[in-house]
Amino acid sequence: MIYFIFLTIISNAICRNVILCDSQTGRPLADVNVFNQENGITTDSSGLCSIDIFKQNDQISFSLIGYQTIKVPYAEIKEKILMKRETIPLNLINVMGKKKRSRKYYNSLERNIKKVLPFARKVSGLLDEYQSIIIDLEQYSGIIKYHRKRKVFSKIEKDLISSYGFSIKKLTRKQGRILIKLIDRETNNTSYEIIKDFRNVLSAGFWQLTAKVFGHDLRSEYNPSTGEDRLIEFIINKIENGQKHEVVEIKAIAQ
Image (cartoon, rainbow, N blue to C red; front, top):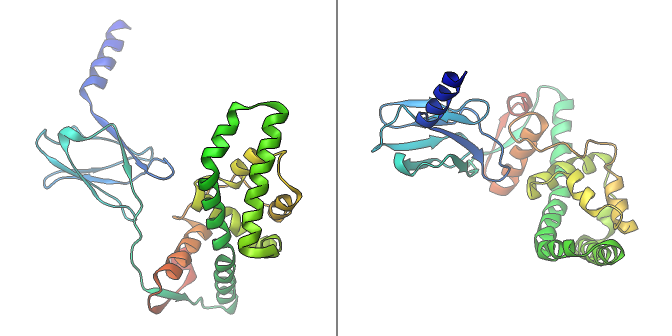
């Protein structure tokens, strides 16, 4: 038993592993290409890989589609490497399925994204703006903390309404569902986490805003690499880039 433990310690000391993660979410990244001019490997599903195949004087590259390529000398590689997302320029695409229902779905999704994306970005901006104040509130407790939080979140509500009027309280269920996704995208926090922080101090107006989306999973995380979230990410990039149109099918994007 002692011999086995000794071998394990020696093995861990000799093997040099690194983990690749998303710089925004902290999630491990699988299938990252780790290579130099002679050798290469990829990270596993946990974002891990061993760099023992490389030499001390090697320049190592870390590459994954959708992320900025990183080049680091072997000696400077840390145990954890954070990769930044990169927007890949694409031609704008009108997604045209073979059926009218597919075209109708896409057009409706695009309209709803255009409707709620400004709201999600405003929420993100306000949370950043008031972040230091919110953190300072943790030094208080009981009724004092309650009243101080109520004042802060009343200001947030007023800022939202002053920017967008009462239209922010009149979202459809579909728009509310997309708003959940986009709040996670813009703030790196699920709607559940945000609402949990605000619970018991929200004004009636803010509850009306969130009530539209309670029929959905507030804990769900935005994942731009799969399903509807991938199509949403595609549409947002399309809106932001403002490039020319071409035709593809919905299935090719939303799979």
